[in-house]
Image (cartoon, rainbow, N blue to C red; front, side, top):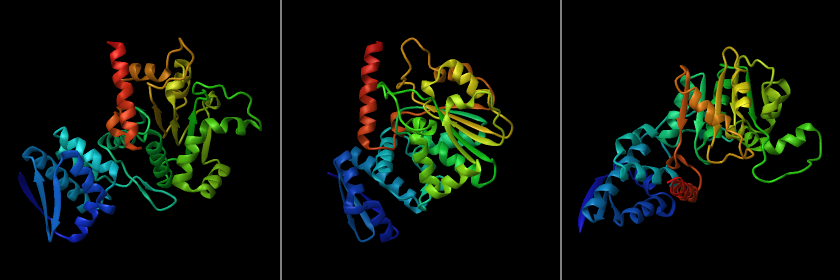
Length: 320
C-alpha cells in the first residue's frame, strides 16, 4: 500500500473539493481504486502507486481550479480525470477561462472543456466559424452566448438564428396555426438558448425591435446581413446549394457561426450535406476556421459520452 500526502491551505478548499455528500472525491476513489482521507490540513491518498499518483494529480489540478474561482461539478471532475489519464494534466489550468456572459438568472456561462475553449476563441478571432461535433458539446449554446455578449457590448446590432426545417426521420404532417407557429417546432432549441441568456421578457422586447430574429433558413435568400451575428444550427441538414446561399449572405461587420453534427444527417438519401462540402471546400480560406469536437467535449449526462463512443465504435467497424 502506497500513500501520498497533499497539503490544503484552507478548509473551504477541502469542502469545495469533496463536494456535496463527498460526490467529487467518490468519483476519484472509484476511478482509481484509492482511499482519500482528510485530516486537519492534509489529504492522504492511499492505494496502488500508479493509481495514487494519478489520483493525486487530479486532486492537485482540481485544487488549482478551485483557487481560480471555478466551481466543481461531476462533468469537470470527470474531464480532469480524462486529461490526467491521457497525460495532459498541464492543460487543465486552461479550463479556468473568462466568463462569456451572464444568463438571465445570474449564472456565468464559461467553456467547460478545452474543445469548447478553442471554439469560443475561434469565434472571437474569425469572421466565419464552423463547429462540428456530436450532440451535447455546447456548439449552439456557446454560439448564442457569444452572440449575446457581442450584442451587449454593442459590437453588432442584430442576432440572427436560423436552421433548415428538416424533420428528424419522422413526418410531422400538417401543423396548425400561422407561418410562425408552423416553423417554431424546428427552431425550439434556439429559442431555449436565447430564453436562458436573456429571459423571456427581454427576448420578446428585442424581437419586437428587430434586434433578434429566429427564422428558417429559407428566409435568408436574397438578404445582405450587415452588423449581425448570424448562427446557422443543424447545418448538416443543408444542401450544398443552401449552404452556399447562406454563406454569401455575409455583410460588413458581421460574424457567422455554423454548427452541426455530420453523424446525424436527416437529408433524403443521395443528397450531399452542405456542411460536409463547406468544411472541405473552405478549409484553406483565411478568416474561416473549423473546430472539431469529440465525445470528450460532451457536457450533458455522462451516458451521452458512452452512447456516442458506442455508436462511433460500431460505425468504425462497418467502415472497416
